[in-house]
Amino acid sequence: MSEIKLIKDAESLSTSTDLNMYLENSMDAVRTNIGTKHIVKKQDDDEKLGLLNVRAFFFLILWYIFSAFTLFLNKYILTSLKGDPAVLGAMQMVMTTIFGFLQMYLPLGFYKPVVREGKPSNFWKNMILVGCMRFSTVVLGLIALKFVAVSFTETVKSSAPLFTCFISYALIGEYTGMYTFMSLIPIMSGLALCSAYELSFNIKGFIAALATNLTECLQNVYSKVLISGDKYRYTVANTVKRAFLIWISVILFGNPVTFLSGLGTVIVTIGVLLYTKAKEVDHNRRELIQSYPRLGETKDV
Image 1 (cartoon, rainbow, N blue to C red):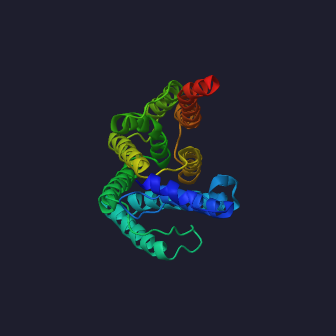
Image 2 (image 1 turned 90 degrees about the vertical axis):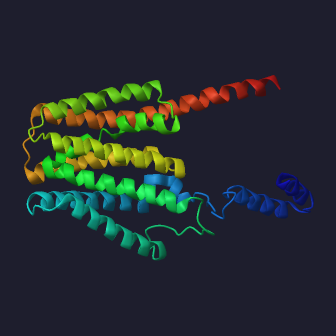
Image 3 (image 1 turned 180 degrees about the vertical axis):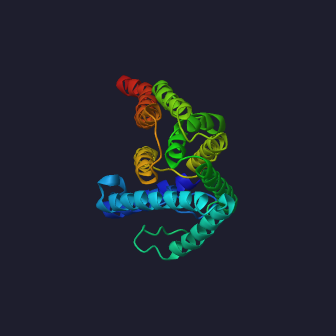
């Protein structure tokens, strides 16, 4: 009935200007989540530019800097001050909640506010689930830092694509293409090489780092179901950030690194970059296969 009403209303418009305005408003209505009043706005030009936008690149650099400070301070508190990972993680989550709540009403130029009329369906349930997974990720990451070197922890975290593929298939049935599957080989090989020859290896820290990957990938896959975003650019930026943190930590903390352990770190980093490219190639192949029958039908017409 709503489609018939739209057609009748469009036929009643007399000028092309009115028609264009009506169609634009109709498209906004289509983007509205039925059953709620949650309005999804279109991407603006700045978001489409990605890291070519100076503002986005500036915030990327800030992300790298604050990530480095947070990681190294965590290591100092846990090892030198003998801090408790659960208490430290809880305090970080409390501060994140407070400042995140304030930023919702005071963006301070960090983002452009989105006008929403109400909340999406199951909002609080989804936020609680994501929050619990995030808290688990933070605490497990701190436990890993308590037992092993920063460089080794970040190397293990870099193997996240391996977990993402299996979790995505198990939870949402996302198919892993051939190129993506092949790109996991250097990630697994590099991780095994790094783990076998890591001088600071500790079984508790290793298990905590792997568990961090598991909870973080669960969070990412579940968030992917809730929202859409440019995962490819984020993955590349996150991989570069981890490589940056690995080598900075080696320099600052003076952690002894064997040749094979360092080689494993490099292999893991290259494997993740290959993984992001393979995901893009497999995605384009699937789109081409899906659109080919339609192209055939167009030629017949």
